[in-house]
Length: 127
Image (cartoon, rainbow, N blue to C red; front, side, top):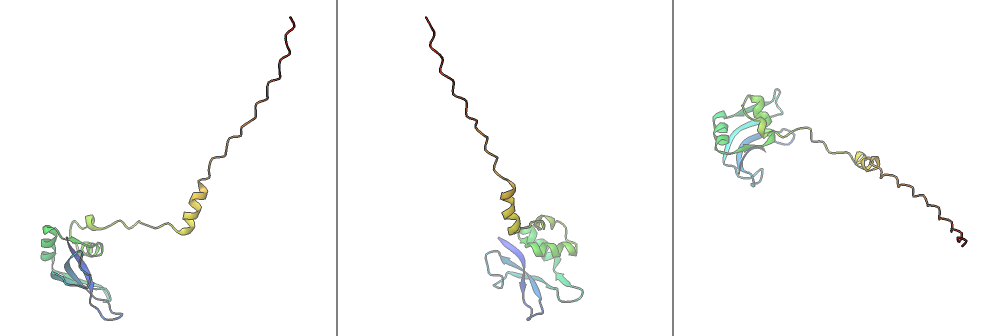
């Protein structure tokens, strides 16, 4: 499967990324099929420049943008990027909450079993 994703090319403490088309199993810094643009988050304002026609072409052929690239393309005004963006409300439970959760669900109290009184022996009937 083809992916449109970022690969870092910037110097130390100066991040800069290429927007590339790669096979999803290849290394992030490995070979890519086509360079589609660049992203410079260190600049003020941040710069994203992509070849829109090529991005649309590759998406129509079946390539999927990564979550980050989809967010960036959506900000640039590309249509239909919502289906590639994963929800942001996935929060992990903190360890403290995980330990308290089982304590909140306490086992039901055991029902008290009352001992039935033993019946008194009946007196023999007089004949």
